[in-house]
Image 1: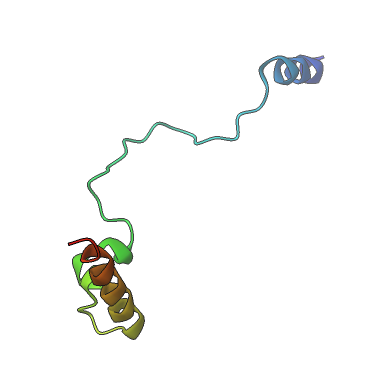
Image 2: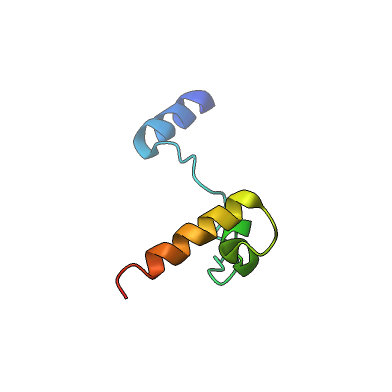
Amino acid sequence: MGKEDDFQMILQNGINFGRGGDKPKQDDKVKTKAKKKKYITGAHGSGSAMQKAKYRKQRANRHK
């Protein structure tokens, strides 16, 4: 009888597969390297980052 009650409760309420607890979100943290200043400016030496920095600079100067 206990299993039927559990089954009925699940049918009525549904199953929540979301996060277990409420954790405070910290928006001021840098979550990826791509948002750090060295990676944005291409200063760390990666060829692709320097290429992206060049394109960002061109885009920023486009309508000046």
